[in-house]
Image (cartoon, rainbow, N blue to C red):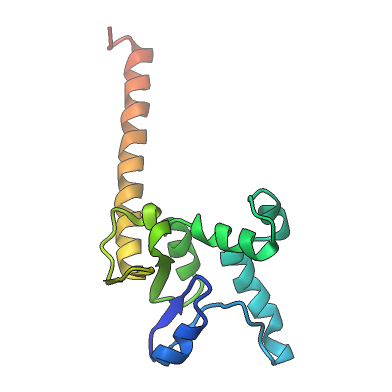
Length: 148
């Protein structure tokens, strides 16, 4: 099977690369798959309640802003339910991905391998868990009177 891309409104990519995409702006023409389309749309474009919290004068602007604020952890979570191989982010909005090496970058977009996002997320989770354990241990020692 060819790779599946999660894109940020770049529908032309499907035609250029001959690859599947996770979601785009164009709804399906087959009624049976509309519920699945809506599920995917909500994951990367936001629900009505989420979009109300985002600045923008049109729904499309808010949906783009929602996608742009997603983090590597968000895409990892999505990839646990759906087959996604790559994530495409507009270059100027890739700051949430600064610690991750892109597989491709040009003036307008940056492409990340989901496996790299998963690896970075695991590292981050391990650091957070380690820090949490240290705080818990410190509090335990303080309560026992072992810390001055």
